[in-house]
Length: 167
Image 1 (cartoon, rainbow, N blue to C red):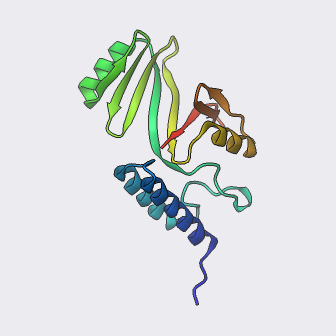
Image 2: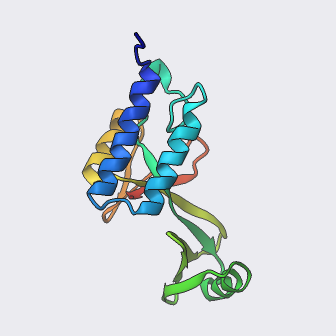
Image 3: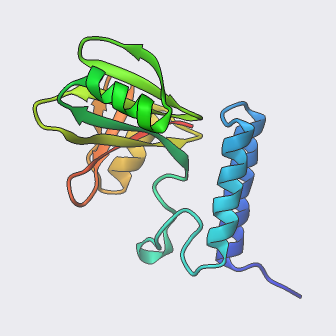
């Protein structure tokens, strides 16, 4: 008789969470398929399906379903918007004097005016996101959440800002 390994159980739990999120309307078909594909691809490795092994075999803090957006700090948002539209075919969805949002399929790129160009932050989609839940998970993992409006951020080990978004 085959006894499922802990990895088999974790994989099944994550697959079930993806399908449940799709059924509840929190994931579209494209994100569901991408999530399932990444889980199955990772199942052939020794690491848990959602990333590197956690100390003591603990579950990951979050089960990201995909990359939601990238936010760039740029000197001139309108100039950068024109660049990304021309060279990558992105489409502007909204803008102001200090920011531009560009559609990139199921994801988007945000451009924010800054005197220090670079990566502002990047955001992972998480199906079960609420700010309270995310902040609690971060604190339980020993990380310090940064709460701004309804958004939740935290720093990676190199100080790069990560955002968690509803997926």
